[in-house]
Length: 233
Image 1 (cartoon, rainbow, N blue to C red):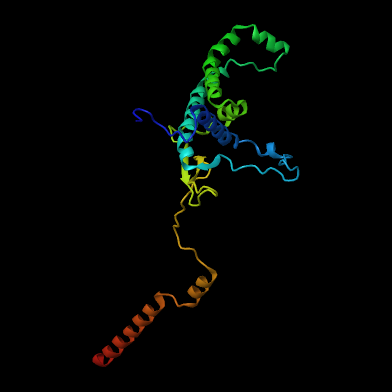
Image 2: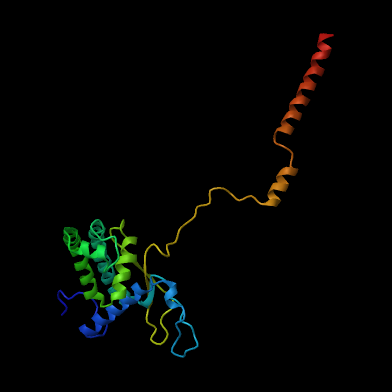
């Protein structure tokens, strides 16, 4: 019986499952690399160039995506909580390069103590994220690129899109797990009907709407004058 045992086993042992989800989370975060990173990289055959993946998106099975989503969003939440501490630490940071004379003076001053106290929660958050991901590059991208993007968002940093075509081999259901805000669908509402050249030409050839009315009024006025003429005589 599975009382109080949440989550999917995914047919793996606990250590294998944890390592698999960690690798998937790192793969999703590392898609945010700069495109310059992939210049000059080749496949194992040495001839085919490595194409950069779609940023902020990975394709996996539906059940893996549902298990991976809480893990990725937890890492983003940890990184978001560290941003205010990093901004506060910038007030006491050194303005000179490392190992210079000015930097050594800053290192031995009280300002360094203030910087250390302000930066401590951010360092702790990076250590917590590294404990989950076990990849320094992924942690750096998470704190520097991904977390600032979701500062004004309270949750729901990712979404799952189920694919219609199953996986080749075992026909497993596949899904896309991606960060929100990158590939959002924006609906455009058409306010006015577009005008084409043919419509404008037809409109110019047609008589104005006021012209027949004026002619009718003129004809009616002539008839009335004809009727009033004999009466006056």
